[in-house]
Image (cartoon, rainbow, N blue to C red; front, side, top):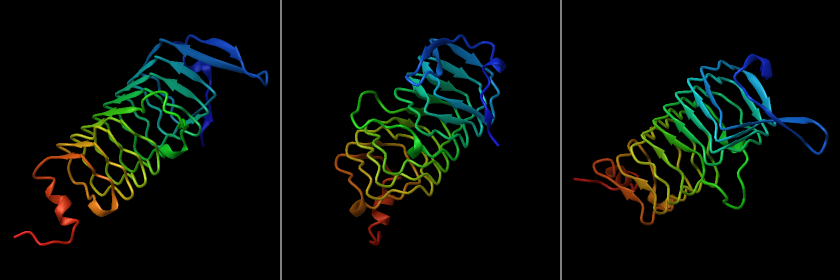
Length: 217
């Protein structure tokens, strides 16, 4: 079971405190770099991080509840099975990290686009759920996104180049102007998705024809 996050186990944290309207104290972390933290199954509630860097940290099974990670970077971290309930990762970068089984639909997504969505580079995103999310302009490059769910998501103007979409789900997905060059193992039915001006590369683009139930001789 997840255990409450204890600030004392991470002495490198330098905190500034602010008081919320209900009188509870909230911690803020600004321009900090954290290396090698082991925080498996810890609970983070209403924590706020601005321009912070996390390197080689293990957050497996952690709970981020109503947290804010603004312009933060996660490098070579393990965030598999984390819960992101009500949390904001606007402008964040995940690089060389593992994020297996994350349900991103539980995160906070502003109705008005104020910051860019999180970026993923060389990450493992297997079994992730992005269903119905407003992810226009997202960058998900050279990742492994096996069995991920992108149905009804807005991926317009996105950069998905080089990513492996083995067994991932696309349906009602907006891929307008998306870049899928070098992407592979996707199964995208042209009739069921918006693909105007999307870019694909050969030979992977042949999969688009296979989904049309035609014979190629």
